[in-house]
Image (tube, rainbow, N blue to C red):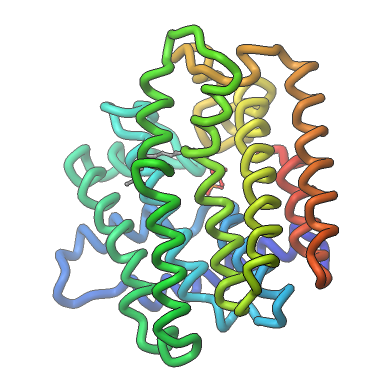
Length: 296
Ligand code: GRG
């Protein structure tokens, strides 16, 4: 299967699952509507595909990992919803439609984001099927990995650095650290979740963590390149914002040519890292290629 077809199949699986679970007769109707607006029917769902591809290396099928993939996509969507808020990156456009706070108001933007985070985590810790299939230790391990990737030394800390670095002159090491925390940790965690569910050894997890961290860096570099090379319509979000907001990026430090060289170098490191995994991981490699070559 082509990698684009693989991503589309997985996105449909995730959307189908979320369509079934994001229903509640007890929660306020507009809140559920806003949650669905934030996570369903858009986005590449690449982090869920990373969970499935890592699981595949341990002979797990996507269906058995669906609640984990869905949880990760809910949490990822939460981060985008909050990132778009006026007090953060202030964007009106996301996934080809008005950002959630533009459609539902700013307070609902905060609350629907909160809802996606909490209900996302609950898809893992509160899921009896997952508990029965993988056991409490595995579910706890997955939860720990996700929380570490999201916490003060992960995504939330990275977002603080991203804002603090705006308009400032920063070192390459500072930008790399911010990228790792804001974007890389969660991509690495997505892969690790598949490996933990597959009962991977400590050595296998270490290889996959290193691979995840390298493709996480690739992911953010490509995101920065696309911000200047693509139009908003193609991206489904506002292009050209990094320069307007004077974001600290590797691209702003080094320019296009050197940034592209750095991207290819990091991609090469990721591929060679994976050769140390003592099992085939073809789909992970294909996803890495997609991450580097993607146009949106
Ligand atoms: C984790 C508690 C906690 C807070 C989060 C708002 C915030 C604090 C963090 C924002 C992090 C962020 C938006 C990082 C950027 C990562 C990135 C490049 C996202 C784009 O991902 P794609 O291209 O998006 O996969 P789609 O729409 O395809 O899902």
